[in-house]
Image (cartoon, rainbow, N blue to C red; front, side, top):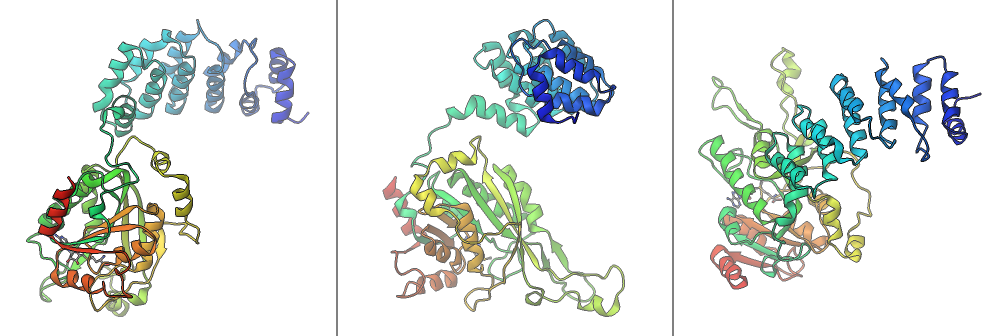
Length: 463
Ligand SMILES: C[S@@+](CC[C@H](N)C(=O)[O-])C[C@H]1O[C@@H](n2cnc3c(N)ncnc32)[C@H](O)[C@@H]1O
């Protein structure tokens, strides 16, 4: 006889004793018995299964696990204390979780006091499993009170489950509808400091933000008195971007570590790991980290730093050529799943927005950099298009707070999205404006180019 899943299923049809007899032929071989238990599937009503408890003390953890999983399928009553005891003595945390799951599957209030105790466990996964078991009795006042206390639990997963289960319905409905936004923001470029501009932008306006902030003091268009000031400036910007972003939507930030060159041969240059230092500010502002995408450039396109080493070959003097930039992907923290966001859109829009062309399958995107006589650090349009296609729907409002030469707006327009850009620098703003001429970027849709005061007036008229 070959021991297969089908064979076990067939045996099960001949009754519980047939299974026991099959197991007895296995010469106590734990892996074979585990295989049988794993192949049992659902149980008929008259299946007693009390013998399964014999295997919960096995030294083979896979067999213990399998036995406990099957015990969860039984209709238990007097056996609860046995499971509580197993939980206390079980050394493996994944089996402890399975014990809670098996108790939870019983949906029996008898075990509530035991599970409530487990909410104090140090393993957050065990706590989550206990919460899951208790949520079945969410309407029970005592249990709801105990669970609500976990809103301030140290673990973020625990916090978010409680937030979703007990508090998310209390939030105001976003206004306007998730797929809609304010007309005065659509296809608009504002000349001003993004921090001032955003003060006039209502909550829940933006579907997607993609931006490349100033590179601290590495380029001459912005100067900050110190690195801390720079980080705090970005913190202020991305807190505001968070406020104006719609529920569960995305923020992608393109930065890279930079080098401020040495002032003379007697001094060393200094490196600033911007994406890594910025990350904790972004997360603290209410963004959830999702992905890090590497923008990979050809080696011939970047500054040669490795030349010196190539000649002297002395350790410690190694300086690799930097061919990457980072694109950090964040989502506005919410208890809602991505599916919720997608469901807000009519089917036709979802269909039209599907990414039909070839798409990036890894987080390394090979894209050539682009140089422009009009700006010292422009986005390649190809990069903007990928971001827009992967992270927004047709008709959405996409935002670049550091608009520069307007590449993101150009890509948005090409992909039937609406854009909102802010730019502080006079020359760059004028450059974008000059593109309004026929055949150039912003001509077809009526793009508005506004000074801050004009924009504020538009915003006031809307409210
Ligand atoms: C790295 S560049 C962005 C280039 C842009 N991605 C493009 O494709 O042209 C950063 C831009 O942010 C602008 N900027 C700096 N501080 C700003 C502020 N406080 N408000 C708005 N724009 C600002 C700079 O003038 C610069 O054009």
